Length: 140
Image 1 (cartoon, rainbow, N blue to C red):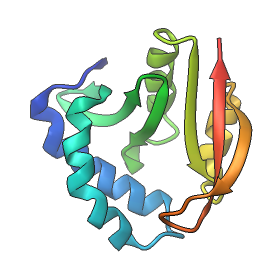
Image 2: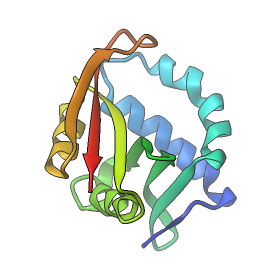
Image 3: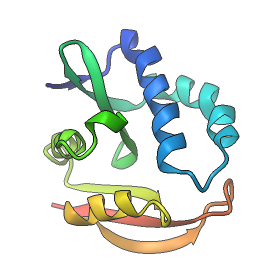
Image 4: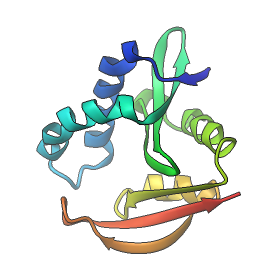
């Protein structure tokens, strides 16, 4: 089931955010994510967040700021089971245009987005991590 974020979800979502970032970005020091934890924790309630939940367990979430996807995060045990696709489908029903940034080395994510109609429109270096990242866009 996909539903809107509720304040009670914050601890579980932040735990998922931290672990998913560390697991999917092995090319970035884990400390980078740990240092950004508090800032992201403050920003989550301000974003438009949808949660994938089953039996009261959060399997994943997607965060949006207007038409920008700040990220899709899915528990490692639930990846490749359609959770990310359902989260993305939820927001594509609400928006005519979406944009995101994804690290070039995160090939699994790049391919995931490409298979769902996103196109690479730019490539640059993320100043915070010195890693190459793509800007990708989707249009209805």
